[in-house]
Length: 111
Ligand code: HEC
Image 1 (cartoon, rainbow, N blue to C red):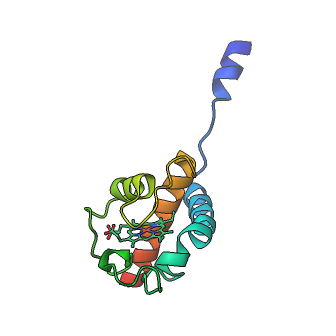
Image 2 (image 1 turned 90 degrees about the vertical axis):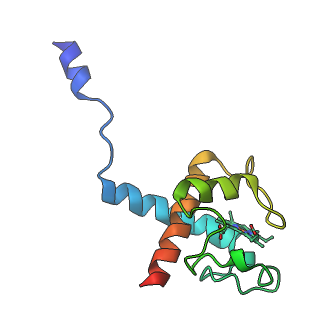
């Protein structure tokens, strides 16, 4: 009996919507603190430090990579001159959340 009760208590995942809202909120906080100085709040990259680099624009639909969450995470992890790497400065979870927020920024812009 006790066993079957335990088994039914398995970690229920949050519904998709709530998890996504939480990830985007966390990603946004990180983005505004660590990324917006170069990429601007809007993501268009029109800042003194980054505007010379076309790929600093994160909302024009053009990517150095294939523009998937995975390659955006990779850019955050490894950096790409002159962008610093964030590996070791952000946790894996934080990197995933920030990548999700970057994609959301670019999608909103596309509308
Ligand atoms: C010191 C300025 C600077 C900071 C801070 C910075 N970036 Fe960048 N980032 C750049 C520049 C410049 C580029 C374009 C260079 C390149 O990769 O060709 C770039 C490129 C990128 C790209 C690749 C875009 C593409 O077109 O494929 C992504 C994604 C990105 N940054 C995300 C982030 C995120 C997320 C953060 C915060 C965690 C961040 N950056 C912090 C300067 C910065």
